[in-house]
Length: 114
Image (cartoon, rainbow, N blue to C red; front, side, top):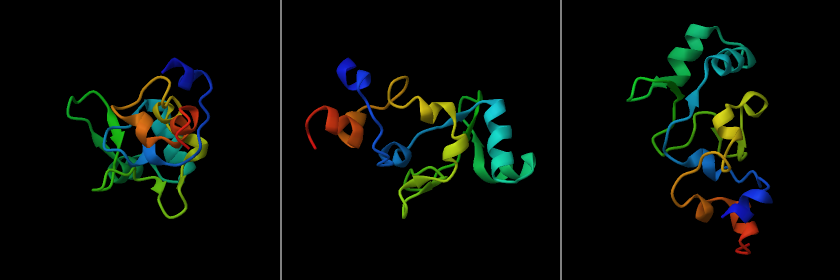
């Protein structure tokens, strides 16, 4: 799998944005995203974050189908791309999920599946 990571190029398919799971936010990211959205901090926190079950972090909310609240499926893009969380930036090299290489178009290209 290291070969996939070495030459990995995101194809912006959005499949990582559609997977159920937490996008844990760091404090400075919360401030940046709220500012980017032109929301006061309390409004952003109330509308777009949830406390993770381990009570150690806030996470971006997701839709019932697992999509991130900031993923625009119609346009296949991240609405906060300019300030997206580090966890998103680090996909798939520093974090991923079981089966990610079957979902991610960038991995499929690397593996010769596309």
